[in-house]
Structure formats: C-alpha cells, structure tokens
Length: 633
Image (cartoon, rainbow, N blue to C red; front, top):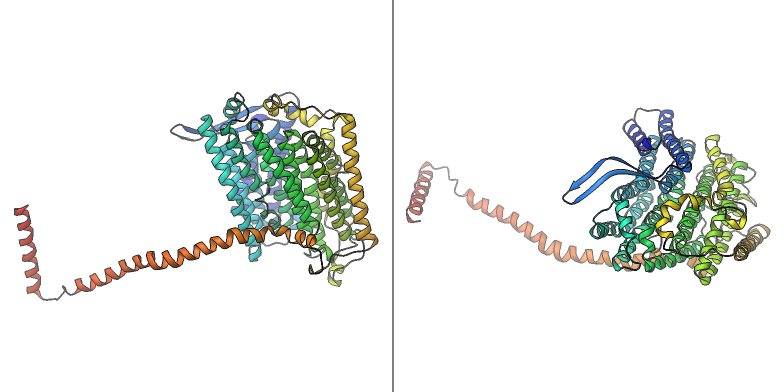
C-alpha cells in the first residue's frame, strides 16, 4: 500500500482538474461525486498505509523523480511516508471528506458550486503535498498552495468587496510570514548543503545546542509559522477570513491549514530542540496568543467570529506545547482540536443555514427544539473544547497543562485562566444560541428547520470523534499508555535523546485535572447564571460598557494599531513618492522624451519639400560628406 502513496495527493488534483475544466457542463451530482470521491479515495489509501505502519512497517521515502537540478542545488520529487505524515494525511482527508459531504448540502443553491469544489480539491492537494513532501521545497510548495487556495475561498463570494478585502488581508499577512520561512529554507541549504529532511536532520543531530545559526534558522521558520498558524503578531487575518463559506472555515481555518505551522515545527523538531532561545520565544508567543484570543472571543457576537478567535487561542495552546518540547502533546491537541472545532464550525453553519444567513447570536435563541441534531452534536463539541471528561479536549488540554506545569508554574496558572475564559465564551455562545426565547424576526422563525441529512451525518460523525477522540493518547495516570506518543516516537527520537524531562507524578496530574475541571465548572455556573437565569443579551451599543469590554469587543484595537503604525505611514510615503518623484521627475522625463520626438519630427518634416532639385542637392551633399570622412579618417 505504501507504494501507492503517490495516489494520495494525485486523486484530489485530478478532482480539481475535472471540476475546474468541466464546471460549465458537469451536473452538481457529478461534481459532488468527483470532489468527494477523490478525497475519500485518498483517505482509504492513507488508512491502509496507517495500518501497515501500525503493523511494524518502517518509514519510507517514495521517490517520484527529480523536481529541479541547477548547479549544486537539487530538489527531489519525493514523498516521506512516516507516522507523522500519515497521521496528518488521515486528518486532512478524513475530516476533509466529511466537510466535502457537508458542503454538498450547504452550497447546493450556490451558482459557483463546481468552482467551490474545485477550489476545495486544490486545497486538499496542496495540503497533502505540504505534509507528504520529503524536503523543505515541497513543503513550501504546499505551503504557498494552501495560502493561494485560502485566498480563493475566503473571497469566494467576490461580489462583496468586504470578502475581497478579507481575502487580500489573509494573502498579504501570510506572505509576510512566508518571507521568513523562505529565508529560513535558504539558510538551511547554506548551512547543511541540502534541503532534504534526512540529510538536514541527521547533520543537525550532531551539532551542539544553542548554535547561533540553528537559532536563526528556527526563528525564521517560526516567523512563517506565525503567519500560517495565526500567532501574534500575524493573527488578525484569521477572524476576517470568516467571510468565506462556513465549510471553508471548518476545513481550512480550523482543522488543516492553520495547523501547518505546528506540523512544520514538529517535523523539524531536532532543529528547534537545539535552539532553546527559539523554544522560549515559541512558548511565550503561544501563551500570549492563547490569552489574547480567549479575551477577545468573550465579547464577540458573530457566531463564526467567536469560533475564529477560539481557533487563535487553541493554536496558542499547541504552540505552548511544542515550545516546552512536548511535540507529541502539541500533535495530540492538533488532532482533538480538528475534531471538535470542525464540528463546531459545521454546527454553526447548520445554525446559519436555519437562520437564513444570520450570524449574530443576539438574534438567535431557543434553537434546540427546532434543530435537535445540531443542538446535540454542537453540545458534544462544546464539552470537548472546554475540556470536560471524558471528551477529547479533556485529555489533550490536561496533557498540555501538565507539560507546562513542569516547565513553569506561572505559565501553568495563565493556562488555567485561559481554560476558564474558553469555558465562559463557549458556554455564553451556546446558551445564547440554543436556549431562552427566540430573538430573531418572524420570517426567520418561520424558516427554522433542521439541516438535511447530507449536513447532519457529518455532524454526527464528528461528534463521535469529539467525544471519543481523546482515547488515542490516554495518560498512564488514567491507566493508558500514551499510544499516540509511542506511535510518533520514531519521528521524535532525535529530540527525545536530548530532552530529559520527567513525567509529573500522578498526584500532580490529578491536582491539575481537578483545578482545570473546577475552573471550567465555575465558568459554566457564571455563564448559566448570566445568560440563562438572568436572560442577559449583549447590548447593541458599546458606549455604556466598561473599558475592558470595549477593549475585547474591538479586538484589542490591534487592527487600528497596525493601521496607524504600518498602513498610514506607508500610504504617506507612497503619496510623497508619487507627488515628488513620479509626477515631478519620472513623469517629466518620460513626457520630455515624447515632446523631444514631436519637436524633432516637426523639424525633420521641414526637409520634406517635395522639390526634386532639393532632394538631389541633399543626396550629393551626403555623398560628398561620406567621401570626405572616408578620406580623412
């Protein structure tokens, strides 16, 4: 089955080509079958390879030829089949398949149906190349591919300029991070003479910790990760990306693309392990992002914006985990987050579908009786993200907290505070959407209905994963054996030989679990009292709210800050350059050339008299001049 791994990215690429080229002639049924079938085929092959790896098969590199060879620089077109790449492939194709199926119902009435699915297939192909490539160039190709597809899908409804602005913002901010990533790749080649993982990692393993060049490389790579995975300071594009269709938010901006930075760090784990300064930077940027994302989510009233800032916060958790060297823990939360956040986004899409496009949670309420399947599956996602046992988020968040506690007690306290904030804003959203009285219009109320099976079945499957997904890595404290960590051990072995960290005692883990659960229950009680017992609905105006409320609802004024220190100065510089140089220098030079030609042609036109004697005189004068110069010189 491993020899057929090249089909995994190829099938979605074929699906993209069929739907893109035949969008004017293919029926919606054919488009759906091609798009969903191609991703399902990739998942089946990936599942077969996963079974082989579980059975003891070793990692393999599947060479498909040579991508380029120029001087001393060569890039192979090779796929790396190992536990990490196959695990990511299963997430991309598995969750991707159910989101494709969900999209069949969600986008059924959209005029761009075939175009939408061609973009989704192209995205899946790009993401698969990112995780399956055996070198940094193929990773970068997939990295840029998912960025391009994100641009297309965020601005899918391009008739609205707000959507186009959001797409451009995502594209530009990702390019800023990509400059750092690409520079890091250049430095890797200069340092190691190769960009192939095998050569780079084997060479790096023999280097001492703290070498300046490794620190520089990893900081540059991390800059790329902050863009793609929405960390401070390059995170503001992600909430605006909610302008795209809701299934896009579930696939790209919750389960796959935004986790590319985590995958890149885990893949390059030996480089980061040898750069303790970078690891500290990652840890503190992650904790700051987690805290800021949760703080902003508390006051958001757009259901997708709440989940978007939640994603920013949850990605911060993952970066904290990898920052303290707990790479398998970061991957564990990546997986559980993919389950419950994809579920929550698709659940939000089902709510929006029932509400005729309405996304403001202040205009919802009491939807549990009209949307019973959406309500129950959404509840599973809520309980998973807040980390209540035995739901998936409980296991991964507890493991992160335990690793952070061993690293720093202060950071562990901040993590607990962030967990509590997460519980508050999630229960706030949940109560406002599904409980109380309906606050929408009569027209919306008459339209309320449960989504069709093509949308609810994926919700049910993801709900099962959100409930049971945490059991893939149960800790010894709860009588498990860290199955996921053991599966990833061959990939992380070089780092595990350097990182000597003791597991916290069972008593410590039980204490941390109790604290996290107690904090979550307290926030549940607060949200229940405020939004159910007191039936509080957020005000439409911020004027009478506190400064902290306004700070949160205005997203920390981060966009305004960037606008003031970056956009406006650049606009001013551009204006000066335009007025001083373009108009007064360059334009005058260009215009002067044109005027000179006009004047010269006017003078030359005087020579055209139409008199034969004058032409003979000029001819004789010219011949005489030529003979004279030939004789003299």
